[in-house]
Structures are given as C-alpha cells and as structure tokens.
Image 1 (cartoon, rainbow, N blue to C red):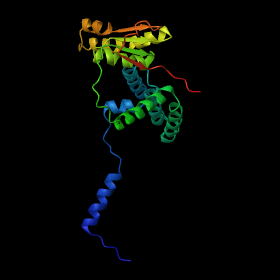
Image 2: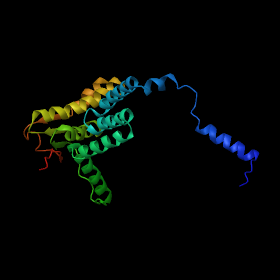
Image 3: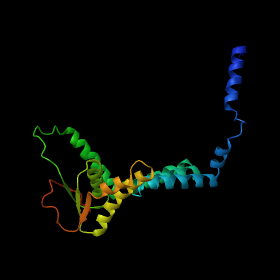
Image 4: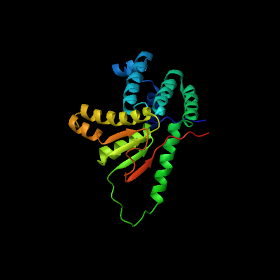
Length: 216
C-alpha cells in the first residue's frame, strides 16, 4: 500500500485534531459558579421564586419542569428522562391539565363556528356561577378589561375570596410597577362583588358558568 502525504491532507488532519482537543480557556466566573451544586441550587431557587410569582402557584407544571431539569443536571441525562416521564404522567391527570385541555379544544371549536349575523344584545352586567381560579379570571377580564360590573356566585365563601384575590393580585402588581394608580385599582375592584346565593342575578344580561367539576 502506498501512502501519499500532501500538504493539504496534513493541514486537514491538524485542524481535525485541534477540534477534538479540549479548550484550555478557563470558564467565566459565573459559569464556574453555576457548574457546581451550590451555584445550581441558588439558580433554581431564584428561578423558582420568580416563576411562582408569575403563576401565583396555579400551574404545577412549571415547578415540576424546574425539578426535572435540576435532576437531569445533577444526576445525568438518564435520570432526567425518567423524572420527565414520571412528571408528565402525574401532571396529565391533574385538574389544571384537564382545564387547560378543555380551553384548547373550546378555542379550536370556536374557530370553526361561523357565528351569527344577528346583532348582539346590549351587555351592561355579567354574572358568574363559580369562583376560584376560573371564575376569578373571567371576573377580572370582564371588570378590568371590559369595564362591566360582575357578580360572582359560589356556594363556598372561600371560592369567592379566591376569585376576588385574583383580581386584587393582578391590579396590585400593576400599581407596584406604576402602570396603574391606586385609585383606578379601587375603582375596578368595586365592579366585582360576590354572593353565596342568587341575590343580584335577576337582571344580569349574561350568566357565565364556571363551576369546578369533579370527574369520577
């Protein structure tokens, strides 16, 4: 066998060898800190707090995602994949997952609905059956975005409190960021009221059902 050594092949071989060599350049200080267990723990703690502040603890998937990523970094890719599979299976059965899937399919169905040519009836007030996260979100959008008075009915006073707290948290956040005046916050919150019976529902132009359903 005859081997031909040319300058071109030699140069290509040298370049290939250089690519496989680990870089001797030291990592930046921030990357070195995050590469260790203490740095990673600090990072995930900070990200976890920021995420919880945004989600208000209503979406368990965000917390589990951080746990899965942390497991993969600390214990390796295989452990990370196992943790991901377990988390997905557990999260898929939660009420939050069911509610989000329902929203997705409902949104898809709405796109297929051509609607009606009839003119809309006047809308001056809204009633909501059911408090909690769903009722609170609907009440917030109706009162604070559309400017309509909202009456929430729930059999449990705690459900009404959760719904009212949702609007308070959203508006108070805007006040703290100086996107909204406190007087305007109070004005919008005054549009939302709650009751454990049907008082105040007789003359509502629209009633929205947002009752939490338990599947057997």
